[in-house]
Length: 149
Image 1 (spheres, rainbow, N blue to C red):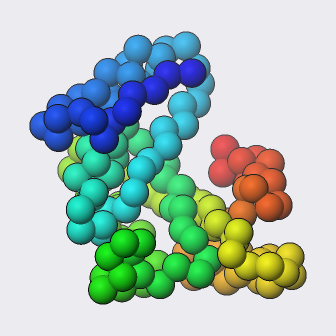
Image 2 (image 1 turned 120 degrees about the vertical axis):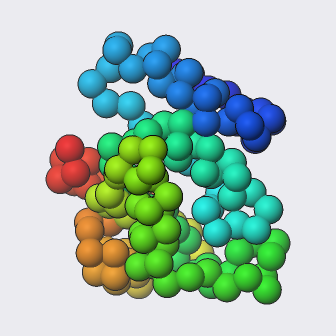
């Protein structure tokens, strides 16, 4: 395991810090998973997200979302964009550095009490994204990983 508290890195060096970690471990593994942080539409923290996206030079993206969220936490006056806009934003932002497509989604359904409703929310999320999706905590992720990779 390797990590860096990237939100404590001077913003000019975030992409380089992420790239350095990947170069350090990349040859040792067939697949590297880089966990993102925050959201590209967050009014305060999007620079960290952008730095991770550019520094990782990802081949594939997994869009993570919370089932009941309609606004940015702590900035409720900022409504979340449609999922199709999210996909477009991430893919277009990645493209100048390294083209990457959103190939899957992961939906946090922890605020949905009923498993049937949670499964329906995941299905709706997948349909809206146009890619497979799961709630990895509630339902596991093995099927999604097999499908994407």
